[in-house]
Length: 197
Length: 412
Image (cartoon, rainbow over all chains, first blue to last red; front, side, top):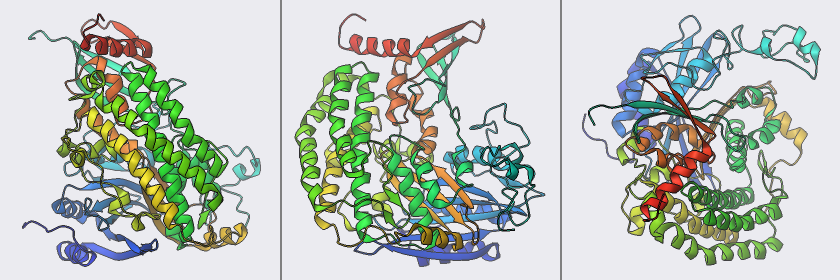
């Protein structure tokens, strides 16, 4: 691939990802939040990719320059687990940096995602964290040991999950015992005793 | 060297004086480190889990308490991310006040770090000197916010207390005090032969490793990497201010990425912070400090908000990041991810430690400013005989001090 001229504008980035990911890219959203008296914008791009296009999306970021992965955030969205890889593109170019946030949805019956540590060696910390906090499996991860949680923490519980594998039943509501006795509801999966009901 | 004895040396994890309880596992060949692996998580408090059971306004004091040194950083990021998610704009004046406080925190963090670094290589006089001069900025923070740490200044949409014209002379006095001292700090940390001997060509992080491992802050700028969120993706009032990347080559030094360069970058950021505070004071816009002072209205607005946002700022230790998602109708924060600077800099330890000596462990461990100034105990395991030996923090510190003395020609 021919070398890319930096910094890439928002239009160029949008066209670049759309061209190379084709049908695998969904819900691309651009944001420019103007800040300060000079109204300099903070630029962001969000998009979702199908899991089979995920490594290609990261490869596209790594072809721009050595990728900077801020972190991966993840959340339990009910039927699926959403992972967001927060990359920063155009660093070193004052005011032109763009946050590229790549979302991947993993269905609950197949919580696997390929590793990206071959392209982004610094991603190992966040991949290990996602495994133990969300119960996903990162395929090909070079080191799958626990990083943050203690060895005594149950193997089948994941602190950021809101389903039966989550930590709600392990939590103690010392301020209001009645909340603990009520099972989580569909409307409020975080805790029982929803006051609105 | 054909008959190699390798030893495993776990250092950490718990000591009351640790800011972040932490362990590093070393593999040694004699005195030389051949491998190093960081083991964090010794004091994982589940802050994100707690945050996801509170409304955003209640998360601010929690976020503030993630770290005692950079308590501004986390409240700043959380409020920025929540404002982004909820579409709330902070007032312009609040942006300037936030910037002034963030830069004051950078000064105190860097001066504190310089003291820790001096202590690790056996210069306790410098430790006492730097920590004494740090008190002035702590006093100023207390004068402005009412607290030495955990300032309770941030709120969604602005700040809780104003910086009035009456406060300007005291701010300027403090800035002048640091300006007058700066030459002395440079003489001590950059000019002193013995400090140079201990920091030059020690704990080297190459530019390539710094980029590949996604390192952040002064740790990577010392290697010549131009990454600084304040410049790359301006937040608060930084877009209005005039500032440039602080890298060693801008000051006639090489971008070697050793401990010396990291010290240099942190010291050079002090006058930069002084300049930024002056620019903020001079250009401070008039107006309100808070876009929605009625908290009940704000909570209601946040409850209805549906969206996601990021807070990304340049903490004294480097880029830090928060992600917040709010769901319409839900009072609690739907998702919150906290990522501090040390999280990304953990992976940079390995290349920095490789090939160095046991006596260099304290200074290299301290050079990314990870809040592990005090290492509790180390255990040496002879993998052949299974024999165990414990190194206390004092012993490691003694080894480091002896190395300094030896380099200076004195008896160990």
